[in-house]
Image 1 (spheres, one colour):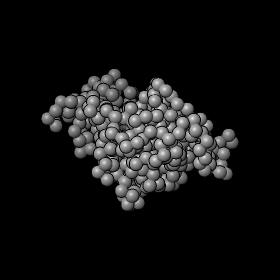
Image 2: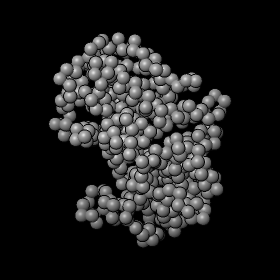
Image 3: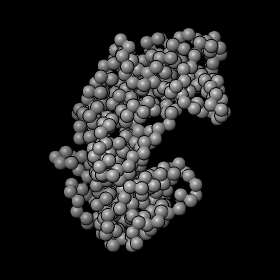
Image 4: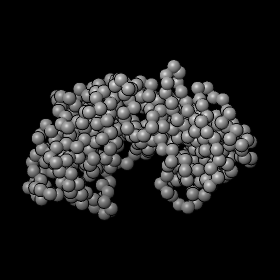
Length: 411
């Protein structure tokens, strides 16, 4: 168990570009960690519902590069899995990696000249069933929801990558990975929590950075600034939003004893906007209507009768891109627009400009009801993961402009 926590801290240090000592290869767990077969021989390994497309050595990176496709009969889906297994100096560990947005994983960033590869990890990644980072995969050619691809992206694809990765590691080295880890941020952080909740035996350690935990809730409520500006008929320019944020930071920054451009605890900050009214902020004067917009964004999404829906941006957190405007109208966050367009409305032409309070509330309710059990990953019961001696590090910055930290605190 101590080794698991130590290795998780090493993973975090690598991801943050920590001191040179931690960049050195990890000491192999096994005395003999050499491959027992040629890389090409892995193409003949038989795994359930899996086709090994290719297996070949990339000499310049000293790795055996594998591509496999996993299918879930009777569906006709194709979850692509990429693996990179060191041809020498394998440290005895396997690391699964996550994606971002609708992108299941990053094959180039995860496998080619990856710092984890340099340290001797066997590394895995996946597209979770669809190419690219668009949310359009949610609809089939008939414009209907493709539930298999949706489940592949939500949780199945990462599990597939993990199962295939661990099996091919065992086939290549003649022994299983002693420890298995998962690393990801944003969507990758959500994928890590999904693994701990749904497949508690997949990983010994999970490093979940700024996880998109409450995907079904916060992705719709990221449209809240657009709703507020529409309802108050006051679209604040992007320049003014940015200038206002800098003014707030400059006013509060030094109160924690350090002038470093960071508000120490924005979650407890009760900032009074009234003294700014009438002053030149950005490209124009800061007005009472501007203050009303900003205050509602900070307070977070609420129903028409004032009931809590989701958290708002902490003061000092950049408003953009959630509060983006263009030519005097709203410019909603693209991932939220795609979520609504493809997953909720099944209408690729939906733009979210403008969006009314009534429509917003209906979309929120639909998202929670329809996708909470699929994308939510907010189940607090981690007993099975704990019973398997699993260790989880969850880290979230307090000035996250896209995934507000209160969601992680709530979890």
